[in-house]
Image (tube, rainbow, N blue to C red):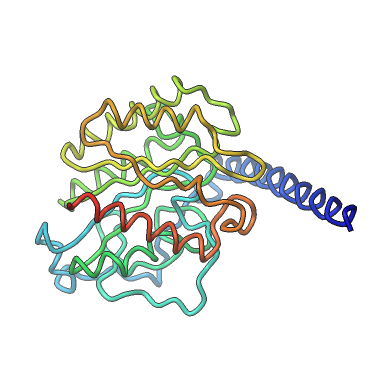
Amino acid sequence: MVWLKRSFLILLLLAVFVAGALFQRNVQVNRLLERHGLRHPYHVPSSTDLPIESSQAPVLADDNAAFTGLLLGQSNAGSHGLTFKDQTTPVNSYQFWQGNLYPASDPLFGSSGDGGSIWTQLSPRLLDDHQAVVWAATVVGATSVADWAPGGAYHQHLLDMLRAIQSAKVPVDAIFWMQGETDATRKTTEEEYFQRLRRVIEVLRSSLPDTAIYLAKSTRCYQYEPYEPVRKAIDQLVAEIDGVYPGIDLDTLGLGFRFDGCHLTQEGQTLAAQQWYELLQSGKE
């Protein structure tokens, strides 16, 4: 009986290791395709996705009526979770893309991944307190903090979103940063992560000076345990920069909430959405 348990554990660890290796290989292939313009790194509206006319979403003209969140980071901040079956989009739940509003549904525009997300699970909770919810996603799986900092591979993607938000005069209530898994695998030092994320925050502040920024701790993925240098860098940024607050600790969700050892199950997405809601509610008190 003991040898059966040990064999099962060895097979499980091997499966997680293989999944991680395949994931990294897939990332390399996708980056090559993106570099040559053969694929988008994130979802964009198709010809059948029609924007909502402004007259159908008048609440956006009132700063207090809608909650708008800017989503930044890598896969667990995007649409890489398991898809919910028979999921319906709540009325007055939108996503913002290049100056237009669309009904919010997974996968989100501006995000990589073909599955579900935390944010579509958070929408119904926020609609208890707001007339509408709007998500603006700037998320690409397997990216590092350096990719989003000035000079990084996806810094322009971030700038494009910020310019679109400013041009459309969309009031943003909160910025959600969920990233760190790639830097955990690369063994980014605490100081490197601190300096790079600080540069990202400076860019955000230049466009959205009064918007609250929430930094989640999200470093657990595949065979990698929570990575302390990134976690400590986030603590330091929260302590030193006004208007930067601690986000949820996604590292507390273990393998039971991750269908492939990294990305969230339906239960994991629901739990993370509830944690975000409770955190936002606590900020009102």
